[in-house]
Image 1 (cartoon, rainbow, N blue to C red):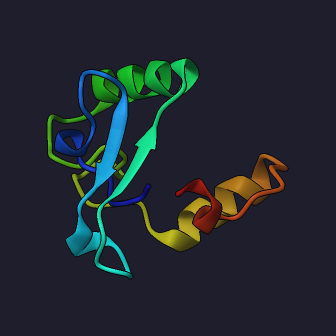
Image 2: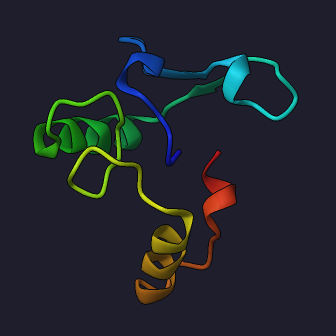
Length: 84
């Protein structure tokens, strides 16, 4: 999720992670629910127009440690790895 690019998400709401970014070197397709699509629309309106979906504001990806801390702060019982 941290390295998701806008080009990975199609109009039908499917996020396709290219094989080059997957550990097993196989493409991974994730159908997105309606709420996820709404969140992505909001993220796009807040972004700077770069290729990454989620950034720290200067176009760089969110660091794993930052995401982990945010989940803890919001008392969300999940880990960043689980967002795949």
